[in-house]
Image (cartoon, rainbow, N blue to C red):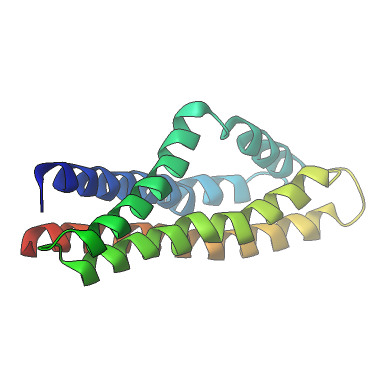
Length: 159
């Protein structure tokens, strides 16, 4: 692969790892900490996190990595000496398992939580169900990000 293709693949792998780290932080200590709060406080805290998370820095890393993964797929099919299987599998793991899952699963849960009145009847049960469902998706996203970065690194090693 050319040095430009290698650099783009390294950037994509690092982006996958960075985003996996964010998801891992939520799985390992942010969400468990939120679960220790009273439901009204947990709902308010997660609603605030969901607003603050949409920073240019995070969105650039999150969306930018998906774009880089698409570029890696193009590289995999156009560079004569590219390890196509590793690169495509890694890129698809991020695009589907991190980016796509976020948009299709976690964001709708966040949107529903945003509309939730934390003082309304049933808020406690809704908070428990939200945490359970959101955490499952987040564990998958975290693992998919690690797998994505790892596959791209494998591709670079065998190239």
